Each structure stands twice: as structure tokens, then as C-alpha cells.
Length: 439
Image: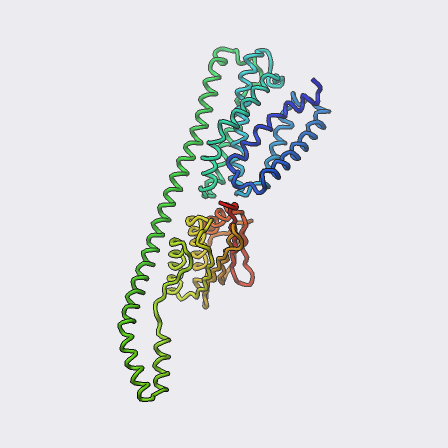
């Protein structure tokens, strides 16, 4: 076989690993499938050019790692640009796909030392390479459902950034373990019971890794369900307060209707006596009387209750509010995400104006397109805002502010379009939430 063809053949294992990278993040790919496929083809052509160039100097069958690992870094860079999730989540998904590739190498090597006892890893046979490619193709089929349904669910719904910043370490550790587990010199596998024990050790390691992933899914699912329950309970409390306000409004309206007859009698007497100045003064006082008002911000009961709840808190604290919400009846952004996001934004705004002489909070929500909703919150602040990259230091404790971190995670889920401005003593958060058309 020509040397260039041999070099390309040894690099072919990358092809079946590409779907494994995109299965769990398919909802967050920035471009259409056709555009993404075109970019992947271009990236593969660049890699092939490098293979041919380096292969003219070295035999990649002897130094496969020289291409595979730099190619992995190159594809991670492209992957990071094409997927709109936090980098730690993308790294977790990417390393998990690479881990499947690591297992394919182990099982193919086990086949290779069985068929070629006198061989070694540097002389990886074509048959073993075929086994590795078939393993990966089978993994593309078998793992489609688990990666899209279960890992995809965790990436979409589990937003604890502190966990994700460390969570990628365990697929990285397992991937490194596969590198050190495959034998380099095959004759060593025939010493004692090594050859007989190795398949059992490999199977145990495989099931152990699967169990760790399953355990991570179960823990994440339990955490998210608990969080949903807490949010639902909070929404019920807010809706309960709103219901009590509604009852007070009904009672007030009943009282007004009862007293209205007496008001008409007074007005009639003043007209009869031609006391027009007194009549004008009396009617003016009647109009200016403060009446409880029930505001409808949104057709979503949960969202309406949350905004009304925070408005009532602001009124008690003497914070001026200007809330403008214009949303359709059918909302594509989930109530849970919207309420968590707005709750954190309004909490942060109230904390920001706590010591201001003239505190105010402005909130504006409006739909800019059929699948896009804009959110803007602004408030004055005093003091220093500490920022590191996209993250803001908490003013309440050491570390990053969890409120904005949670908002940032939700913004990433809906297009990663969030901007924070701190100009002129005004803290402004702008978010554009984008959902797939027709969702």
C-alpha cells in the first residue's frame, strides 16, 4: 500500500468519532447541519493535508500519536467555536467522545495481540485498525440514544457551573487511563495469566466507567428535580400572595360599589345648591383616592406572580420600579428558566440599590421576533464592580456571584447572547433569548 494511503488509513479513526461529539449538543450547534458538515469537511481536508505533509517525513503507523493528539486539539478548537454552551460543558462532551475512542483502541489492541503475538503497538495491524473503526461505528449507533437523551438532558438542564468546571476531569482521567492500559509489547501479554486476565480487567473498567456516567446522570437529575420543586413552591407562595391581593381588590370594589350611592347623593345635593367649586373639589378628591390595583404583566401565571412579588417588595423598600412587559400568550421560553433568570436579575438589582439615595429598577421584556425575546434590567449602583472574564465577583461572599452565574448559564442555553454594562454608575444586563423556530 502506498505510504500516503497508509498514513490516511491510520488517521481514519477520527471520522466515526465526530458524530459522538455532536450527539449530546445537537440542540446547541450554531449552524445548520449542511453548514456544519461543510466546515467539518474543510477541517478534515486540512488534517489530511497535514497527514500527507508529515507522512512524507515519518511513517504515521509508527508515530500515530504525532497526528492524533494534535488533531484532537485542533478539532476541540473548532468544536468550541461551533457549539453555544459553556466551555466546561463542551469539554465534558468532547472528552467523553474521545473516551469512546480510547476504549476502541483498547479492544482493537486486544484483538491485535491475539492475532499477532509477536507484534507490538507501533506495528498496529490493518485488521486491528478495522476492528477499531467497526467498534466506533457500532458505538455511533448504540450510543445515539444515551448521548442524545441522557447526556443531552444533563447538558441542557444541569446548570451548576462549579460542578461542570470539575466534571470534565473524570472523562479526562479515564481517557488518560486508556492510554496507559493498552500494551506496547505484545509478548508481555503472554507472561503468566496476563493474557487471560486482561479481558476481564478491561470489561470491569468499561462497566465501571458506564456506572460513573449513570451515577452522574442520576445525581444531576435528582438535583434538577429538587430545584424544580423548590421553584414551584416559591411560585406557589408568590401566586398565593397575588391571590390575596386579588381578594383585597374584590373586597375594595364591593365597598366602592356600596358607597357609590352615597357619593351620588352628595354630588346631587351640591349640584342642586349650585356649589360648583365644592363639587369640583369633592370629585377631585374622589378621583385621587388610592385604589388597590391588580397588574397583569404576563399571561403566564408564574411569571406574573414573580414580577408582582418583586414589585411589592420594591414598594415596601421604597424602590421606584418601572416594569414593562410585552409578551404573547404562547411563550417559547420555559416558565422555569424565565422565572429563575428574572428572579436572580431582580434580586441582584435590589441588592445593588440597597444603599442608594434614589433607588430604582427598570425592567423591560419584549418579543423582537417569533423566536426571540429581549430582556433588559438596569439599576444604579455604587462601589466597585469586580469582573474576571465573563464572571462577576460576589459582594456578599468570596467567589463569583451565583445569581449572575445562573443567569449566564440560562442565556447560554438560549443562544449565549448576554451583555453586562457598568457605565456611568448604572448596572445594565441585556439578554436576548433565542429558541429554535417552531419549537
